[in-house]
Length: 292
Length: 283
Image (cartoon, rainbow over all chains, first blue to last red; front, side):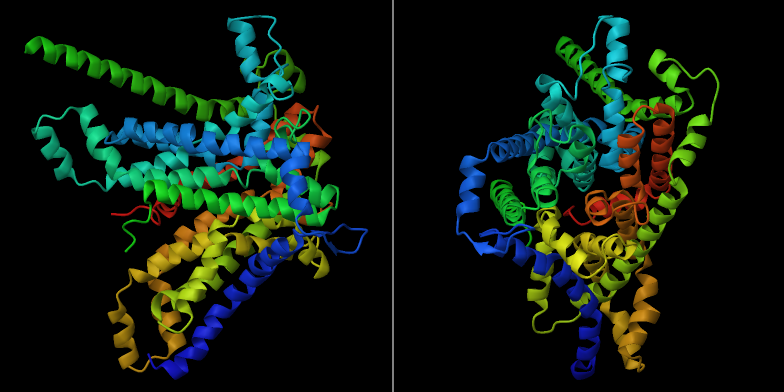
């Protein structure tokens, strides 16, 4: 292609994407970083306060402490148990075409309906009065059972966690797709050498899908940095602040308290968490080792 | 050692049965709550509370009628369809253009642009709600479907970009080179040759973008007020908080939201699954 003529087209083709990127990601990102060091509210002019917001966020604010703790626990659960669940299912259905079809379609459905709807369905399933779970327990185990799963502080965290922990279909899909690329001859020669099914899974398949497990951990862990809908629809962070997440706290600070500077400090923390997760997991699992 | 072999077989089949049981539990857990919601949507509120586990005595569509009566459900449907339609079209069009240029031409700044655009891949969009909210208010787009479309086009930017970059790279360069020798211009090559062969790539990206637009909650929630631009997820949440004792209508509303997405998933499961996996699976 002749470059002098093409350059105009190149610019024209890139322009809409670049403009949109600047508007929705670029400028907002710079705003978040810059105003995290300021006191900026709806009613007051913006003043520079240095690291005050960060000190408050990390050491003085009880809600923030709870939100950070919850988010860290959820990140850990998602990056271990959740990924393990998806991986286990991929292994169980590997090379069993019918089972795989039934499992992948039905398991994807609750993953693909929006978290808002999943949250609403969960509210009903765990409703103390007429919910599915309590109705079953009342019928078969204890007729007096009235546990209020979502709004009793002792079970709220557990119940909310189930809302994403159980739904590992994306992990399952990714692991299964990676397993499908393993060449048949490797598995066959291992079988001829007398390796058992279990040995093949542990010593041959698992090392080959390790980078993909790393990718799944990154996806699952960082999804917790976006978690808003499910909690908002179910507990709204309560009872008290037992199920508060950082994105929900950010939303409350920005739009209900109109404390923009502090909200953006929470935003910076979220971004830093995201970068740390990606760098840490990449290092552990060498996800990009074969990316030339 | 026949004995050993036999016991090995027994443990093997035992673990297999255990595996099947586990898979069946997962399938039930995935489908049963939805079936239960569907059943309940045909019951009266009294029946839902009185006999939650039983089948509906008769199929009553009262809940569906009520859902339409107590909220402008059709308007929310229309909003969701419009926002999704333009969110998908806009996203695919602008990224079909830019991903092509980024995949095909070596010009100064190309790698920097790809690197900068990749920032959107690792950035949690939740961290940006305050400035995006301000931007939308300042540009006078608050409570408009236009704002939602623009935000959704941007939210889908990283995924669509990666799918299309990957797809364009599979097209042999020879096709364009021979067209160029015959004197075709840049836009001719792109619109007459590249766009038609790339339609499977566009379809995969469009399907994922559809799911994003149809379900997005957070930005729809902070960027709209009142009924004018509310999409279905917000309407459902509003419904839940306003009419939270009218279970029949609520269950019916959930079903009406969920049905299109399930039908869509069943039709396009191949594209959805390949869209989700292709980019990350390495041979």
